[in-house]
Length: 158
Figure 1 (cartoon, rainbow, N blue to C red):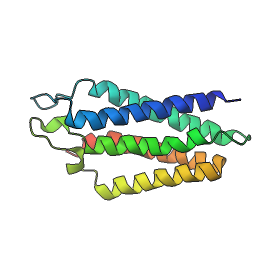
Figure 2 (figure 1 turned 120 degrees about the vertical axis):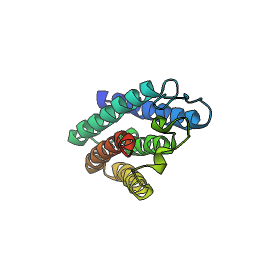
Figure 3 (figure 1 turned 180 degrees about the horizontal axis):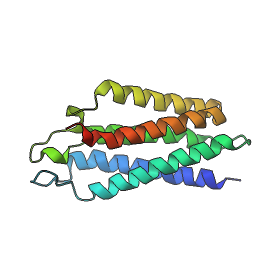
Figure 4 (figure 1 turned 90 degrees about the vertical axis):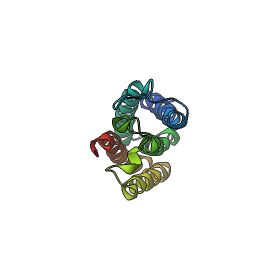
């Protein structure tokens, strides 16, 4: 029988996946505005949904780390890598601050080695969660918080 935390973890994973797809598609398909600060349509909503999904994913990982039962770790193993997918997609997206030039967040203050390190940590957390769910969920919790902070630090590199 699935727990409520597992159901919420699926919701968080799906939301992070959809937000990642939006960022990837919006980068090349959705037109940006012409004035500095004009986001692509829906960009603010997607960023807020992603923030809520990060918090939900971190919370469910933490709750799962407290449970003594085994099994059901697959969705929890997806959370940190899903967060890394959104982080990477957001990092490659255009920074509306610099419109009308199409400058990416990747050209700003958060450097590639940090993104790679966080992504590798996310993959490691996912693998650990599959092998040892309780400690893996603790690591995933920490990695998800780091991912969320990184995503929302991207615009600060002006």
